[in-house]
Length: 495
Image 1 (cartoon, helix red, strand yellow):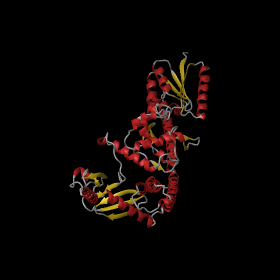
Image 2 (cartoon, one colour; image 1 turned 90 degrees about the vertical axis):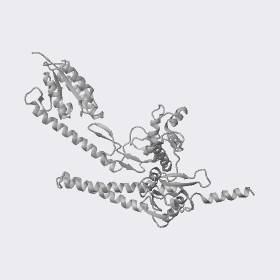
Image 3 (tube, helix red, strand yellow; image 1 turned 180 degrees about the horizontal axis):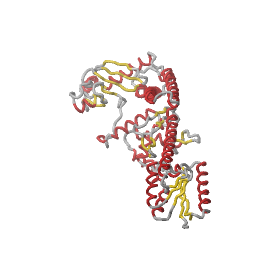
Image 4 (cartoon, helix red, strand yellow; image 1 turned 60 degrees about the vertical axis):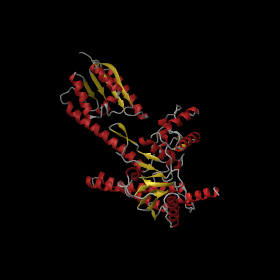
């Protein structure tokens, strides 16, 4: 009797300690079994260690086995089970049929299936479908576990983040020396006169090594400048896996923003200045232009057309020069596009002081109590969602009703999370609620979420949603007061 050339295939899906033991066991098992069987010439074990079985073309040893089969070096393949061989039913059947056409059998030991037998495909299809279903269930369980951790604000941290050390329990602690470099990077960029690539060159010239000991690059710097972890927050689920492929989350999945998840390196005022510079430089029309930052940049919204207000100077270089804020749409496309009124910078500065003082005087600072009420409601919703899921799993509620009620809960959860985020954003203490006697840019950015201007009314929307409005007038055209003083001084000089 001709001896058949037999190969074995083994796979373990992770590099965990128990899986490594499984890999060693499979290797030893097939070596002992097939080497001592007189019906076969054992040509060896093909084994993929720590690789998913979802797709065959991502397993190098599996692909090498297929090549040897096509070259005529293998007559039969032995494997422990369908689950170990492949978990994609369609792909598995394609491989089986392809090998069957050239007379090569696959023997699945657990299921006792030989693919050259006439009835093998039916049993193989069932076994493969079960294996694939197990994979889907397992993946869903893992995804649910991760989603649950995200909802609870539990963070998943990578292997390296410049400026921080990662402890054994996967938490972030500040690295003092690297933190100094991080602050310097943010400060240099916020100044507005140096870009990411030049900062990278400066660091390299200073002999300061990058995160993994190499050279700094502009892309590394830009990545740091937009990383919310440096202000002590963390965005969860920036990426997700679909069909075995890691993808950037651009809205396909919920993302979760965790405030104060760890110690900050950069304060929020500096962070906001940097984000504004990044946004301005990301505009191709402004490429090469260094944007000057003003206190109300990106804060003022036009109540008529929804565009942002921008800073402009009227009568520049003349005695009538005055700084104004005006709707960008109106400036670009004229009054036919937007007829909304502009506002003089000195006027809006004074009105902020007035509205801020009213805000703290009238007891709107009860953010702590509001946050507590919101958190209690959030906890109750999480509990209700879990209870609803259990009812669904037990078949006590139909799928349509489950989805409808669950979506309603998720919408409310998302809205409350946003409110809590806005309250926590300010990190306000009782000592922060002090009256102002002059304009304070830091107070503006910590207390005000946005400013709306419409028909000679300016409305300040504070961090907790409270709105306070004032009518206004820009007074005389231009800067009459300064012009009068200069004119008087010039007259005095002339005698």
